Length: 269
Image (cartoon, rainbow, N blue to C red; front, side, top):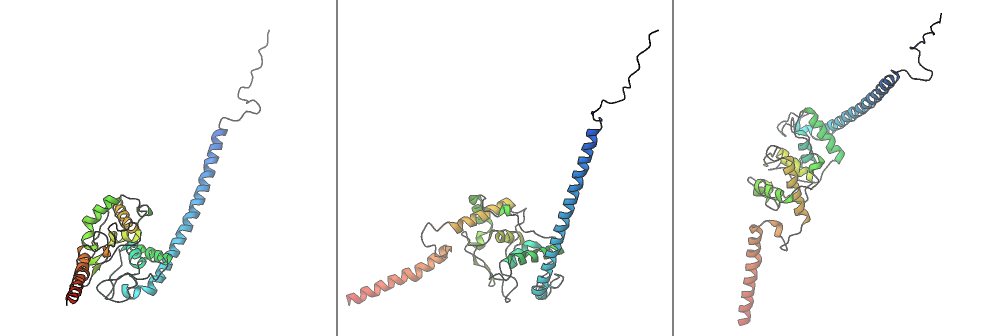
């Protein structure tokens, strides 16, 4: 009888051939390693960021206690000498301290712009400290401060919302009770944006519902255009419009006419 050939063991893999699950295992190991490294990196970065933020808040708190707490209170609650700062946000600090209006040098109808007493880092630390106590308007993003908006649209928005106080050329103007709208020539873009957000002094608040961030950027572009463009009509007389022009005519124009009349009379005599 013919013997049957021995049945080969089909479960045995040829030498050198990988197991079908080896690729899956390698993928799992790679994903676990990548995820672990990412978690370690992000955790370290988050810890460093948190530590830096806490240090900034601590520095801002020390500056506030030394320079602001006398009027505004240790807990920002305000008092007889100064208003509460709870909820004013970082933008308010950036404007008031960054333009030198605060700390206040002397009481008066309104705080006036003066040389800044703090470095940019100290102003930022104060802003972070105040913002950490309660939410409020934040410092604007750099994308709206580049002066790359639409100047013509900004001019129209400025004439509608701002020119009645600041003059169409941003030259400023007088208000009631000794207050005034300051000139805007040379103002920093972030301070212009801050002012629209917080409404300092008698200025109304223009939040993002009234004037969108893009429209605020257009207004900034228009004001920067005025800074960079000389008066096409010659001497601008302060850009105060008919007030300065009329004063010039009355003083110098009529004065010159009177002087010529007196000279002609003396010649005739």
